[in-house]
Length: 287
Image 1 (tube, helix red, strand yellow):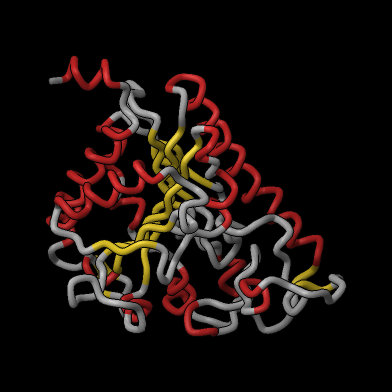
Image 2 (cartoon, rainbow, N blue to C red; image 1 turned 90 degrees about the vertical axis):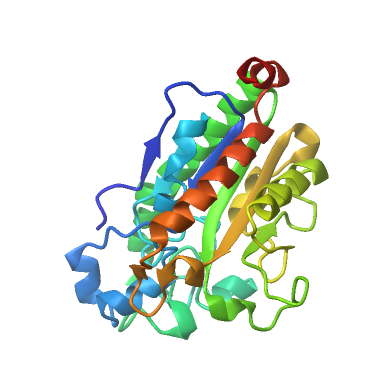
């Protein structure tokens, strides 16, 4: 099994209510898991948001924490609910009506990776599924909750940025932005997980750096945004999806030669987003 659920990087001084988190960047595949899988290492990695933790690694330099998954999404999906268990994969579950994510094989213990390719030869036990949730899902979400509560206590609000990447092909069937497909999709569950001003400022940060941005289509936000976004109570959660083709070779799962250049461009966006959650008095002192 993977060794750790996550890594937490903290700034020297916490200066913003913004929290960056990457639930799908984990790549710690145990040999035991790979032996049981029906897929090879490259195929199974297609479910990763590869390198997203590296893209947002500068968050701590702007006063914000960065929580990054170590456990792979193919092993346990940290952006699903703990009860989203798939009876087609997990032995001992009563077959009952499942939500569309579970029915498609993308529950908290995924049955498939990209393009619907099956991970396993057969089923896994209910005990194993529950152990994965207990050992990896719960520690990650306990840490998110702690960071959110700390932000609310210290700054009066929290802004959770749920960081993801999307396959380029996912953009083929959505509307264009000024005649072109978006580079970034912001998900606020159509206003339910974050306040309008917060989302507008995040969109403006990306746009100022030259990124084309759309909202909620085809990704409006899943469990993390739904659970931690309570804008009426000062708790905002926004999912960010970045087109993978901008910084990586999707077929090889390798960084593009200009990866560092892309990361430098994104650093300015990260700085602007962190500033959204910085108290006005702190910003004035910095100026």
